[in-house]
Length: 205
Image (cartoon, rainbow, N blue to C red; front, side, top):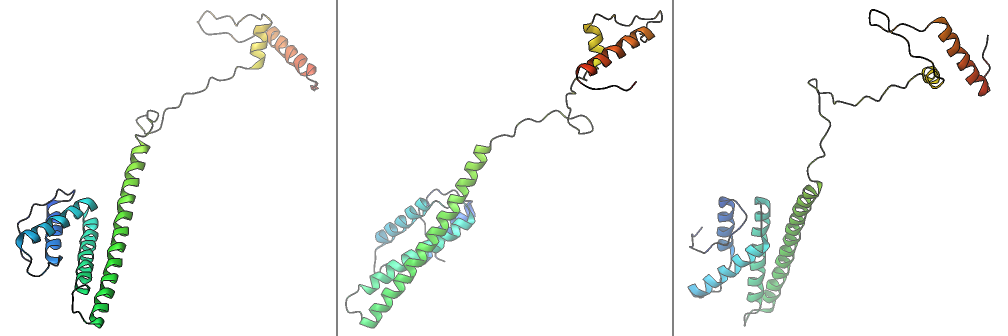
């Protein structure tokens, strides 16, 4: 490869991939015979402007851009050769056919490049839209999440007794609560039986 000093365009690639891509474009671009150095420099600058517009962002996209550029400029050169004066008709048709094939190849590489770039943009948009995950409940030392226990339901007969004004169990001298007496139990059973009878439920004696 012939190293040529050029003003490289800024690309979102690592230095090695960027340098290799630009050198490949220089080596595969056909120049018009007897063109001056200024004309060659203008042709290189035009090619680099096209690379910057294609905007490759990873080595795979850089590969597609290199193939696209080579096919594009080769097709343009084939069209130029077909337009030269004095070209035999058979060679003229051959140049035109080769130019058509190379143009289609450049279009295929362009579509593949745009498909990869669109997929990358959509993936970035989905990641941005998802945002941070919602905070989870704090975990204990064993890794289990802490759950708030629901209050236990109170027995019906206890609440019924309180509604009817029954007294709370008295505390014993030792400080512990004493159990209900026989009279209180009989009263609770009578209230339960009356409640079930009002609901139409028979209670066996």
